[in-house]
Length: 169
Image (cartoon, rainbow, N blue to C red; front, side, top):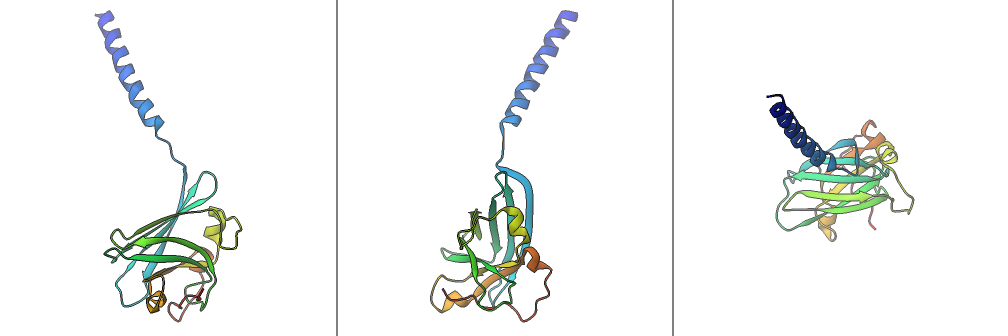
């Protein structure tokens, strides 16, 4: 009986060992640090959502924009601007990947700003800036902001006057 118990125990340990190895093999490039910012509707279109900043182990950031209220094949440009959402003609700090209308999502790895300077996750979440999602890339629809929100130190800044149009490039 003792011999059979040893076999059962060894069998259980082998099964548990394999199970742990499979789970341990799953790794991630992310640290687990992330900051989520609200994006409010910026026009008559009922579009809102979030911008999630996820820190990677190398210190860089992946920005995931998730919107509800978008549809179809449209591509909605996303800009990271210096200053809060009410700042007129705010400089573009970075161009992010467009939100796809049919999914309402955009994902952008960000390691540098438009001026060529590198930027880390810690620097981004301290930056006084905002994200604006545009209806279109050009023409009069470019000035229609679907959704926008302050990020970093701009979140706590008092702002009034609505969402300003972006600086023409």
